Length: 193
Image 1 (cartoon, rainbow, N blue to C red):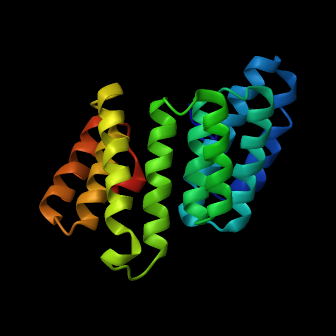
Image 2 (image 1 turned 90 degrees about the vertical axis):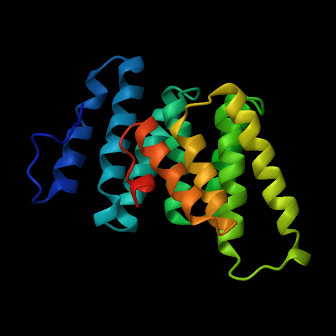
C-alpha cells in the first residue's frame, strides 16, 4: 500500500509529514509497520529530492526500528539509504545492526557485507592488483556462493553477480545478471538503472 497514493504531488513532503501524526493512533505493532511504509514512501521520492528527504527516511526508519528492531525491511532500507548517501558510516552502522539482529550467517548480512565491499571499491577510482583487488573480489565471490546456497533466486544475489561481472569488465555477463535480478524480484529502480 502506498501511503501517498491519494496525496497530490504539490507539497508532497509537507502532506506526508501531516500523515505522520496519525501513526500514534495505532497499536504499537502497527506503528512500526506504518513508520516503515512512511520511510519507503519518502525513499521512493529520493531520486527526485534532496538530503532533506533522506533525513525524513532516516527519521521514519529510526522510529520503526525502535518499535521493532528485528524488522528485516527496516534493516534493508537502512543499508540502502546508506548506499544512496554514499556514507561509509551509515553503511557500517546498518551492517552492525543487521549482524546484531540476524547474525553473520544470514543472507542479509552476507549481502550487505558484499555490497559494502563493492561500495568501498567503487569509492577508489583507480586500483591496481597490488592494492588487494583480488582479495576483495575473492571475498565478495565467496559471500555470493554462500548467499546462493541460502537464496539462489534472490534478486539481490543476481544484482551482486552483475556488479562483480561489471568490475571484471564482462559486460555481457553483467547485463545477463542485472536482467535476471529484474526478472527475479520486485521492481527495483537501483537494478533498472
